[in-house]
Length: 313
Image 1 (spheres, rainbow, N blue to C red):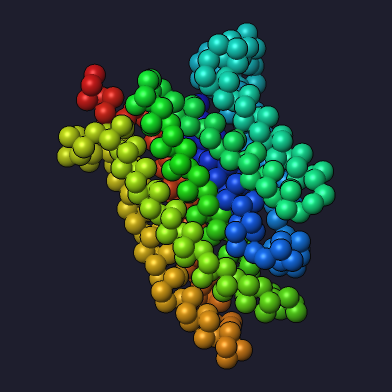
Image 2 (image 1 turned 45 degrees about the horizontal axis):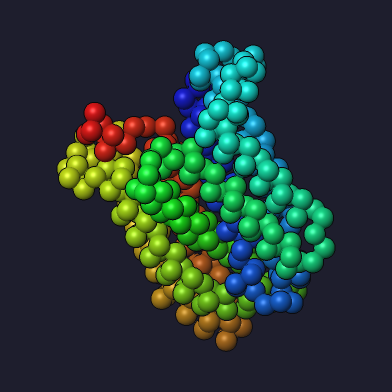
C-alpha cells in the first residue's frame, strides 16, 4: 500500500474514532435518565469509549509517521525525526496533532479515573469534541484566512459535531437493541423506544445543522458557479456520492421515526418485540453502513484539491 492510500486509511480510522467518541459519550446525557446512565445492563460505554480513545491515540501517532514519510520520501519504518520536530514546532498540522493527543489523553484519563458517571461522561464528551475539532485545522477549512476562513472553520466544526451526535446515536441504539435473551433485554428495548422518540428532535437539529453547514462549506470548496463541473473531476464525483449517501441516511432516519418507532411502540404494548426490534436494527445497520461509507469518502476528499481551488488556479 502506497503512502497516499495509507494516509486515506489512517484518516478514515481517525474520523471513525473521533466522530464516535463524543457522539457516544454524549448520548446518555440527553437520552437516558440518571439511573440508566450508571446501569451497565442498559448501556455499557466505558470500555468501548476507552478502546476508542486508545485507538485514536495510536492512529494519530501512526498518521504522523505516514505524514513524515510522505513529506520526506523515507520509509515509515525510518522516520526523519528532524522533519517531525519541524512539523510539530512550525506548522498548524503539528499544533493540531499535539492538541489532539492532549485531548484524547484527557478523555482516556476521565474514562479511567473519574468516579462519578455524570462527570466522566461530561469530561469525555468535551475532551473528545476538542479532539474532533482538531481535524478541521488540518483539513481544507484550516487553509482559509481572515473572517471567511474563520467562518469556514466554524462551519466545518459544527458540521462534524452534528455528524458526531447523529452517528453516536445510531451506534448507541444498535447497542440498546442488540439481540439478547437475558432479563435486561426487554427493559433495554423499552428504554430504546423512549430514547428514539426523544432523538427525533435531536436528530432533526443535527440534520438541519449538517444541511446548513454543508451549503456553507460547499460554497467554499466548490463554489456554486462550478456546480456543473462536479461530475468532471474526482473531487466532484466523490462529493456527489457523499451527498447521495447523506440522502439515503435521511430517508432511513425518516423511516425509523415515522414507521419503525411507532411499530416498536405497538410491539411493546403487545409484548411481542422481536420482529419490530429486528426491523429497527436492520434499518439502523443500513444507516450505519451509509455513514461509514461517508466517512471513507470524507477521508479521501481531504487528500484531493477542491474544485474552487482548481477554478481559481
